[in-house]
Length: 594
Ligand code: C2E
Ligand code: CA
Ligand code: CA
Image (tube, rainbow, N blue to C red; front, side):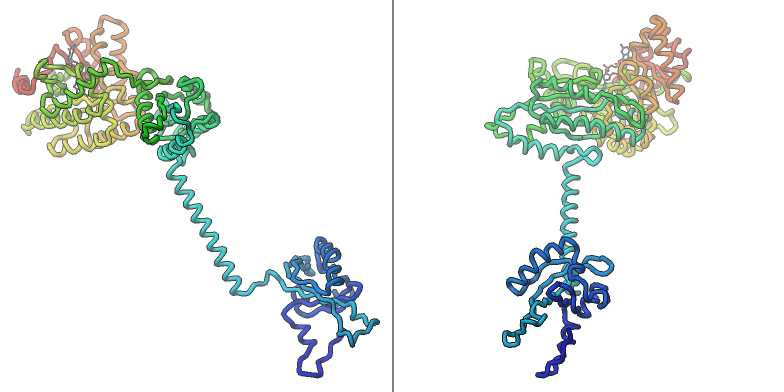
């Protein structure tokens, strides 16, 4: 087919065909290509001679060939045109280009109609590529895509934040706040008066696990424990990690009741594989049970917090009574509890009223035969009942938060006393030891407070020793450990009190910055009498010396005990033999005695 310029004007129709804005193909009645324009050749990569005389279908992939014969050709035949179909144009190199296609049957005006003319059944196909977008379009699309992407990024960031706010990064369990949020949602779904159980778990000796496996190994253990707790969600429990090695499990009380705690403990103590090493970790568990009483309109979150606190108390009881066991928090208030509450009120008033004092028990240096220092011991000058020793009030005070206040008072008083004793610059230095309860070690301000007191009194920190019981050491509390480290860094000495009566044993000693070991009086009493006690005292002294610690023997009442201790190389002794605890006014005369 050729086209002649139209006589009516200067329009070059061939030029229009060749370089119009679409790819154009003309086919005959057999659907063979009889003409293509330059733009189509450009897009398809074919040369004109590749296409002329060949089937139009070769420009389409198989799926579109079906569309062509089944739909496009019948439509052209019936209606004379096909508008804006989405097709794929197959290029010479077989690359597929998405295109819009319109087609029309080419027919002359009726007066020109020549039934014999082949033009009667010619079709014109117009392709416009779908992918070739304008720069503006491209920019717009890019902008939209970018907006979508940053939207997705924002959503992702929001999810990350939500993740960090509510989940524990190491184990993917809930964290404390995530757990509380879920409990509130859960409480809404529970029927009123539902009973639910809260379990708080502390891994036993996790510090030791961490120490022997390394941080990464410790993390593996935590993740393994978390996975086991996660499976409890199958029975409707929520699990969270709320501290380094502390987990909480909460849910509607199991049909087995709180004894479900045993199932939890069993699942944890199954061996864990860490770097092909089988590790068994155990946990101590505290349980607490509460009823959700919607009529009382108590916030589920505050119930949950109380439950967690109570379960934590029970967990510490479980630890103290030997670990790898569970205890139910008991809120039953019996007579003795009422007595305790009354006593606590009295102690609080006595603190405000300055009824407490410290007595000081001298310690003898066996090598020099001279006074080494004093241990400060609390006394309560009760207005009605006379002098009360620590046995009458320390335990109750420790159960309440009041021990922090009492301990702070004791620290301040003892440190000031120590400064007073060391007032003479040329005199031999005298030490003061202060008893610190396990609970105080958990007070993050302890190290700071002691440091400030030592500085304010311009005292050599090495003259102050803090006595901690073994229980204080083995709480596994990272905060207690941090306190000990900070105190040690400040130069304050640390002693283990009542050594041998707790659960710590020698293994713990090398993990803590301990300077002094105090052998409990009960072993000293058996010196030379009981083979076992004698062996314990002997090995305490040997091990302590091997670890560079000094040894104090407590409760020394006889000359025989003193001689034996001197023989064994004990550094210091303290006991009625040398001196009973002294009132602070009696110290000066004790020191000036020959
Ligand atoms: P502890 O630290 O083991 O103190 C030694 C206890 O043994 C003192 O009893 C002391 O009076 C007594 N003792 C000293 N020499 C002898 C002796 O030769 N024979 C006998 N049988 N006993 C002797 P105390 O003063 O009744 O203190 C009892 C416990 O109260 C202390 O045991 C200590 O754990 C605690 N405690 C005392 N003061 C404080 C304090 O300021 N804070 C805290 N948290 N606890 C304190
Ligand atoms: Ca002590
Ligand atoms: Ca002691």
